Amino acid sequence: MLGNRHRTPYVPGTPAPCLTVRPLEGCRGVRVAGDICLATRTIWERVLEQAVREGEAVYHLELSEVTFVDVAGAGALAAAAGRLEDGRRFVVRRPPPALCRVLDTFWPDLSTIEVSMT
Image (cartoon, rainbow, N blue to C red; front, side, top):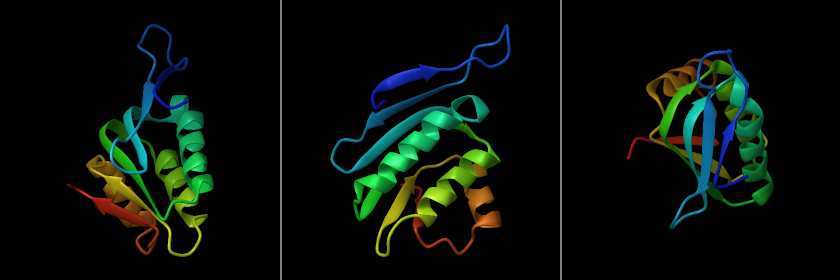
């Protein structure tokens, strides 16, 4: 799954949304690019489930190349963060502004997600 470009059918006649996932260099985590939406949700949920299973204290999600995250994608992130054991967290680096707003609105006290804009 990592390092692959995934395309799934979307609306006929338009480019299918895709989600690219690659390992990060220098720290534990992944770099994600593309759209997190209905068409790519299964890929996103698999990435998050793998992160939960790995057991790292800090797992980085570099999202600077993500162009869109729907509410269900944000919900999948919050649900995965809720399954992290004590002392673990996701560091979400450079997410789209809409993701920050959704997290602040629906999950303002979720201590297992740290948003970093650097």
